[in-house]
Amino acid sequence: MTAKIIDGKAVAEKLNAETAAKVAAFAKAHGRVPGLAVVLVGEDPASQVYVRNKGRTTAAAGMLSVEHKLPAETGEADVLALVRRLNDDPKIDGILFQLPVPKHINSDRVIDAIDPKKDVDGFHVVNAGRLAVGFDGLFPCTPLGSLVLLDEAGVKLEGAEVVVVGRSNLVGKPIAQLLLRRNATVTVAHSRTRDLGAVCRRADVVIAAVGRPRMIQGDWIKPGAAVIDVGINRIEEGGKNRLVGDVDYDAAVKVAGAITPVPGGVGPMTIACLLRNTLISAERRVSK
Ligand code: GUN
Image (cartoon, rainbow, N blue to C red):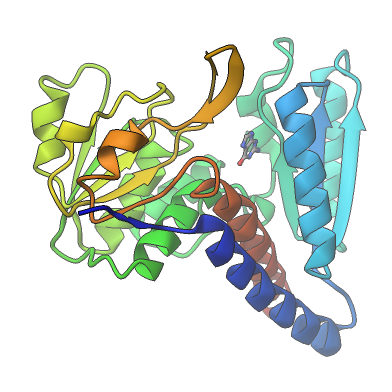
């Protein structure tokens, strides 16, 4: 048996088309388009690629895309002042503060300054709390994208055993909360988990979000299980630079029922969910 390959690029394109149609309807009803502001401090090469892609996709969906690219030496006070200006700007519905940032900036303080209603990354503690408690809010994009892929693949979450490997605030914890809201039985495993292989083998769904290349092995996957690989690791192999996930894909694809590739799985869903969050924020802001 080989697994069904979950095509994240195709699902992201479909979601982006739906968002673009809703953006057009929003513009007709309200005489403006939803606006997303991105703040990038410094010149991290991966961040520059993300920000360029975000700008392009945002504009393609018919939204306003505003980029604030600040030099690496910009002080925290200036970043905070910019965030407050964006909080007060009626054209801006979403604010994304690109991570990572230079060491002299405390990213927690910057995220804390973002108006939670405009926090389209869902990183503010108010949104993390609202997610945990079961309220409406804005929730992180990679976790949301992972759930969309599971739904598209027809994976039943209610009552399912799901093992999330990784407990970061950006992915592991919010994904566990979203899965609980869908009535899954959720285990959050991590680097100190005893016999991680045995824990994973129990799972109907494995979510790999540890940031370690190919750590999840093929024989850790229960035959027929769904595997969502959130990892994006750059490695040197055979003299070449390659992108690999947290799952040993070549082995896992032979056992799993469905699996996301890297690249082309979860990756494209993050921006698609960011655009959807920006639209949701705009709709909430006009209806209050
Ligand atoms: N850096 C890499 N991915 C992301 C993301 O989704 N949001 C932010 N703010 N920074 C990132």
